Figure 1: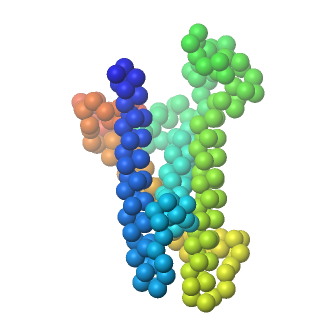
Figure 2: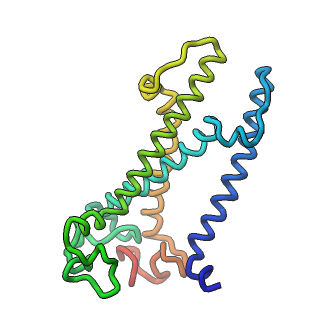
Length: 223
């Protein structure tokens, strides 16, 4: 039970992620087979659908935008500020901040991660490991999403007796960018909205909110 308590957030979001992914696959399978039958083609099994480009594209075009927005937000917050927002640090804290404040090298604590104590190039990489990981996952998701979208596009081309296109050609088509940008813009809107709403609105007990009685001009979280 202690493990569940200490990892409640990860377990909660992991569970609802799996539930919604399964639900999406079920309804997506139904939609796909309805389209197959409407075009006089055979329906496919649920297992076959899970490895299809139709399902892969639908999943990854959303994942990709999530990694993008989190990575950009982590980077933007280094130098950009929003007065009164819980998602912003103080303007005087601009930049990567001192080794002392970051607790690295000679300023590391006894229980600091080993990579923070080394003070060499490994500490430098570790200091940016969050955005490196997010950027890597984003580009991988973008690549796979583009490949599954390309496969789906060429399937439609074949069904309409038109010529398939190359992957590089597909990357220049409105079909690819319309699906991509509609997800990106929604993520940027959500981040901007959260940044502004935390200036004026509160959620008692949440780390994503300032204390209820904090003034609107107070920037960042109270510790």
